Image 1 (cartoon, helix red, strand yellow):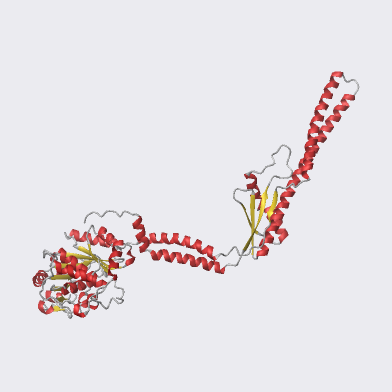
Image 2 (cartoon, helix red, strand yellow):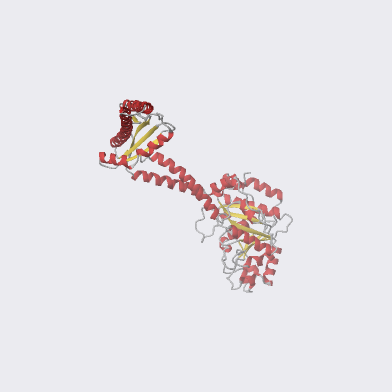
Length: 550
């Protein structure tokens, strides 16, 4: 098999993944919203009230310092407003520990103090009480600083008074020289000048202290709120929607990453090394019970699924226009991918187009194709190989479908691979190829047993059935590798059980094309051909124009 090129992700790839995994996105999002709404429903209502505090220059500042507010001052007040000292004072006054928070309003000097409580009135009361306690605390701190500064000034003034008095005493003492007396006088004058400056600063400080000493004022007292601050179902739902979408998309891509299954036509062709998909068969949703085989081309000849099998028939007839595709082997990578139903339904549409068709059941381990065509598996292919029955006796016409014959598998033998590779089996297939226009071989899957590889020696073409959403990527790759080792290249793939959620735009267009179904009236039904030959290309194209919307 040719080297498989790595898949390059692009925007379309991501959109296809989301389309294919939409259930994950929707499910996780709905779950997140439901959890948020349920959480809101059980929460008790809480109310929040806010008081605005303005940080401004203090009414009294030490001489020589700037009377302005810096960003650092606002941040400092934010730290102080919720410290343990203030909280303790508020708790003592209220009788309980309040729930508060403080934030700076934009780039301003305003601090928003928010209190949360069980009722609107209590929330406003807590916010206002907390604000007043904090303002009073800051005011007291400022007063304490002013008092300490006054005391420091007074101590310095007293020191100068003592020094001046000492110098004056020395100056009046007897025996002091005139030079010494002049020096003392100068020192007294200097001390008196410094003391005068201190007294002026002290006077300014005392005057400023009579004004508002604190730097915090209440600009907007809290009022009782009209609605609760929590829970808020609408807000919580929007937040849950956003979070749910993010988690859902993550879950979708995680599921895609760990999902090793084939979903799209492009993916199947890439994994098989370029083998073309000849038909995409929609999933038959009405088929509920696998133990009861349903031959859709017989029960509903104008259904979407039947149209897909007609498309497969046309692709094969064009591929074998030179007559070299007489015997077609139909297999799959693993079991339950739909190879037997594909074989039976393809046999019906080939026969109704005028071909004389033989369907051979060669799945000798789990025989099933005979059940689709209303025949018992008790007598069939193995009966002929073991000499227990004549070929003409085991080969039976399918009731209700002209030109279609089936050779069921027969009794299950102990050595299927050896029996299929025998000389007698070769002669049976040679006789069938000479007697029928088309021979369809229903084969076991490739990976579990070697039977299918043995049967490839009798086939002119190999169809590999792949179930969308079921066949693993590694299984499809391995099946193609096994065929390559046997020097067999599949003629084409059949993408079975296809659903629209696959996310491949080409498959969407294909399945949407079945939105219109042609159902002719009885007098319009074409007469069955009995010439035993395939239709000409023009006739096939004309039939496709009837049944398909392009």
